[in-house]
Image (cartoon, rainbow, N blue to C red; front, top):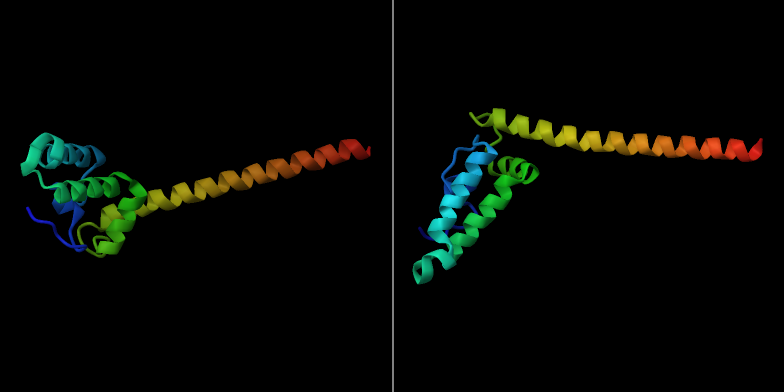
Length: 123
């Protein structure tokens, strides 16, 4: 397998479907590593391909990077992968807003504690 340009599809590179779950992606990655890793295959190994396989796994194993990758490659349009796309972005935004809610709650708590402290000092 030769090195492909930036238009390569990470799902095809690992041999999984775009709606593959994380366990399938990890399994496929490990199989590809056995075939491409220079330490395992010796001089016949394609180190460029190994690097591509590793990068594909890094992107697809991280939910945020995977959602961005799907959006940038067009896998998130009105195709059969739309369900995965919306599920990924739902997770992304819910985690983002949950984090913001926690930060706002922490800030309110801190302000309330400071206010109570000032009331104690004043009276």
